[in-house]
Length: 151
Image 1: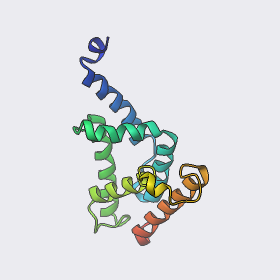
Image 2: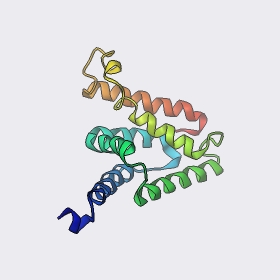
Image 3: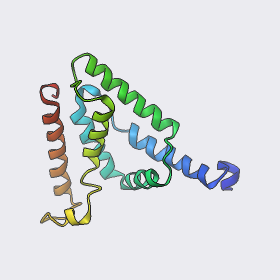
């Protein structure tokens, strides 16, 4: 039935990617005027849906061609950042694409860190307290990185 509905195993994989990554990219409200809130919300979404994070990481190794929904989602976000930069609401000394890449990496950082780094904390590295502490640090880092532009 895979071949009937999806054409191939790759077609099935692409459909899963479209659904999962599309949900991950678009469920968190994106406002270029409040990038710290976006990073915090994206982190929360990754914590709530760890399978989506695993799938996106696996996909980046196995299937490097982005899907149309991914391209559209990133194009919307980049356009919003560029617009906010042009209006003086977001720093413009970092290219929009680099800024978005850094924000996404900050949100994923602890969740994709090696077990050796996780073992450096005295608490459960995936426990609620540790995740809340890391989330606060990430949101604060984005505030600081954006300087007077962030709320």
